[in-house]
Length: 149
Image 1 (tube, one colour):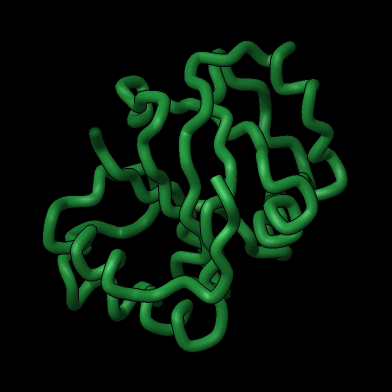
Image 2 (cartoon, rainbow, N blue to C red):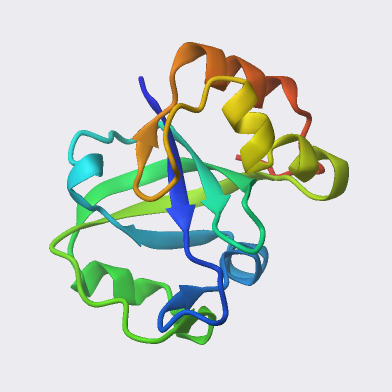
């Protein structure tokens, strides 16, 4: 099983941005475009949502419920109020559900600078698999809120 970091564009000054905090707080489960780096993602794997500038930190731990879902399948969850601009339509989507949220001090510990010190070797511009040392660090940070699976 792999663990992934997925970048979410939360910058309100961008042409496209997604209010991931509000979406997961209100819906708990959402669909996410299954881009090429995620072609081998599997049901049951864990994804951490990394929020882009201005946040620049991991905010959520989620679990993959479905892979290769069609665009039509995504219509079972209406998250349109959290999506701003045109993100386009993907060939496939993954369905993820929130397991935990990181806020305050826990989110500060998962800020980009701290992730770089603890094993992140790339910029967070596309999905990546978390390597062991980075995953160990992330797992050492207690979430602010745990959700039942």
